[in-house]
Image (tube, rainbow over all chains, first blue to last red; front, side, top):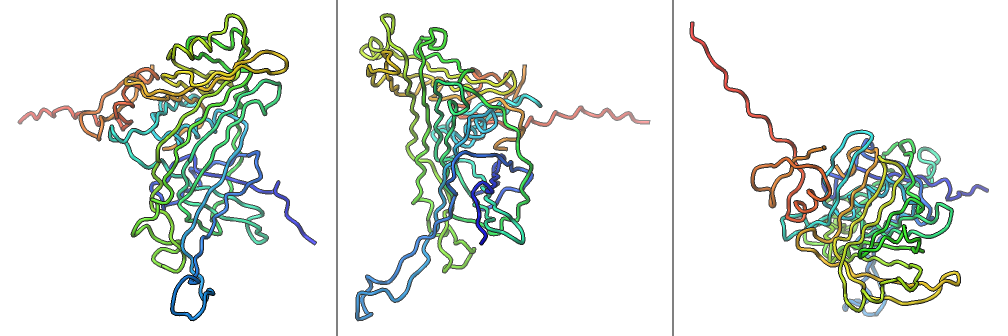
Length: 346
Length: 51
């Protein structure tokens, strides 16, 4: 009896952006990366039936209809320069690329529709394959995906698991099967370990004082999924109304950024004082592999929202949640991602 | 110093060339500037000499 183990799963997705939501990436703009989680990015078919309709003589369904398609999934990875750059470009949406090989720099900020920016994030295609070809188990490409959000977690300890990124993605629902994609060679990634971290929050260097224990920072786009279905948004098979509707746009909603960290607390600690005074300042998080591969996140202005004292490994610690505040000059968040891969989000 | 070209908010105005530093780019990106191709260089006028 044959069986399929999930370790055979291979994924690749667009490092370049699609030209529009319905036009898939070409393989030349896709890269293959490993991931940590087993979850698949399943296209989900939503159906309705006529059980509630009058005129049938009973309350039972006599027909079922394909109504719409969803796509959603999560990508969990050890944080590396390449995926960090990709998550910032596709997750925040506004990108300026500079530099040359091997040091491309992607400066990313959130899109600002009030300043003329788009309300749609860049789109990419996501491919999953298990034994593609004659012995295919799985070979499909989800088209028109966007980054719903990312979460970076940094912890204390020696292993790679202390620096991770989780990326949530959603899609238009459109997919092609078989994908028609020949899986590219694996991309070599430059890990950004937590031991490389620099951290300055509200005027305190938490690395030089050796007090930082862990940190989590995230971005969520709250994409308006239902608004993706509008009159004319099309169907899984274009023009065929029996195949289920797909989304024609994925617009971000009310976006939310977060910053939390745990630090050792002693007589010189200022977190509670700054909470009570509502002192504002920047938060700058840096991670690096080398001079050409790094990620720096700058929350341009923030104030502490909560500070709770507790215990970590028998030390007194402060668990801090900060509220990012929009700065009139510098905005909310700037991500500067350096890596050797050209044309991310291009 | 790397330089990049940016077009103004709403795609209006002449492209400007700026230093590609986070401080410079952040302020302009927040204002609505976005990256664009370098504009074509103006062609030099050709001088015709009559016989």
